[in-house]
Length: 89
Image 1: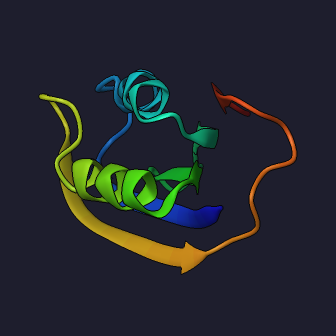
Image 2: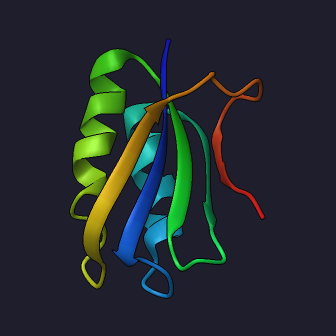
């Protein structure tokens, strides 16, 4: 299993980014979580097969219709212990 931690910056809060990620992650069969950060970014942990993780990373560069992604920091990460993809505080 491949896992990445993403920090997505730009206009990504208040535009449905987290809900959009849940839909896309479910469609790709990914596990992990997504949350808003105090600095205005969105942080996510995505885990699954290599192709699905790479596709999600690619999709996040555009995001939902109202988002404007400026940058994404990507780091390798440990896979989550819990299955499924959810919003966390």
